[in-house]
Length: 210
Length: 210
DNA sequence: GTCTATAACATGATAGAC
DNA sequence: GTCTATCATGTTATAGAC
Image (cartoon, rainbow over all chains, first blue to last red; front, side, top):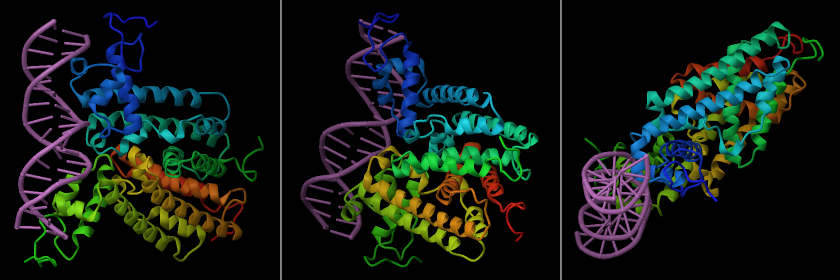
């Protein structure tokens, strides 16, 4: 029924097979960091979700901070791939930014990257904070490039500064999660995104009709 | 040197005097929830910061959730007062929204209200989540009213929906905290705010000069 | 109202057998 | 590589003395 892994044992946790113990530990940590943050995630919880014992975890990783770093690096990488695909897609600058803002999200779970910035132990660690900063900085930079392209093409109001509007776009998404989780509904996230897009939209007075 | 409180004892914590034990406990909890969130805040830490013993805390409050609720209610109330003063101030709609966005903040500490929405135990409790939702909802509603006024006065692009732009304004602030904490600098928060204001600014093409 | 004692359990990790 | 002790400390209370 379940194919045994290389050691011949059958994992008892959620990840049935095909994944190494180290990978299962990392994935379980990714999920728990997303759901409960760093301070709210215990090694015991990680082990249980990964179907691994104490000794197993401490064999592969030095401890909670080391495992969390591996998880954060992987989450950051995944996030760049997801966002990159949409931002590098076809369409005008407005359309690509719109596609990024309107993509499907597990809104009520929040952002797996942004969420960690509220964790005191994460922000206190340069090693843990660096990947968060790198990912958010990359996203903001990519958005600024696209906004600059759109500016050249006459899509946006000439008065905007791409770097600042890019920051506002990223902030709207991050803050949208906050509004949604406060209200217990995804509606507030969608409203914030629509509000931003309406401000950004090519104006009939200054831009050519699409 | 230190005036004794009503019981004649001298508190050993950070709050020297003049405040009741219950008030000191609430204030210590407010600070710790802001700094470390709900899961990261222990009763012991609260007691130490308030200069109160175990028995004292459990005499005044039923437990950690009860004390957290008292703290959250007080923080919510304080936040409404601060924001309300600026939003009810003088000036045009754009100027009042600008004043709210540009007010002094402890940016790197994050928002004492919004921060708690990332806490799984807070969001899981209707009692704890309600004041957060109430405060954010009130703020968004107040901003929407002001945007509506500005719309009537011809300050903004006629295409905007006040309720949605209000959500974008609140989200930009909340997300601005995320960007700032990720980078370890307040600059990103300021950029996001400037980016939003540049999108919202009365356009020379459609609005009368101020 | 405040204090100390006690308790049952969780945390984060180490040691050593298998 | 994985497992089961073991451990010191922290968590979240309750009990009862003062």
